Image (tube, rainbow, N blue to C red; front, top):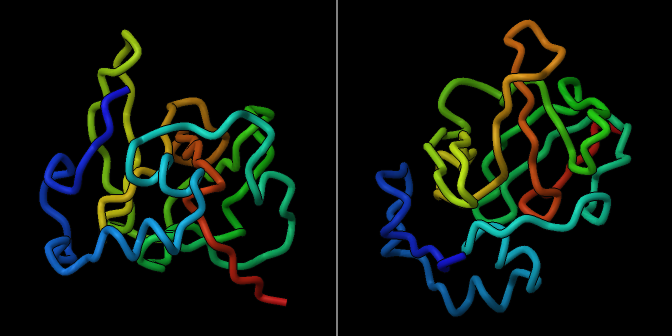
Length: 144
């Protein structure tokens, strides 16, 4: 897959010209960088937070924006952390992803444009959506 750049992500709430990409690359692990900056996918069952059951808030690993509540997390059996909804309107942006020979809905952080995962219309919540998110794109703050 072709590595993506900030310019590929469209408008965001944060000016990406202010981001020092070299410093960001040093701060993130190799997997966090590949997932958030190159739209990679961590292997199923390998990422952090897959089995996290505590209540708390999941934030973007790049910009620390609050994205998901632990109250909406569930075990989808997919191998990635899954949520029935984002933390609030405008926290997760949706984009059409035509990679890999299929059409999917990509989820990105609305604040910084970091790739998070994909949104699939097979969730158990009232909206019927499953936010299938790479654990490498997230940080977790427990309520406990």
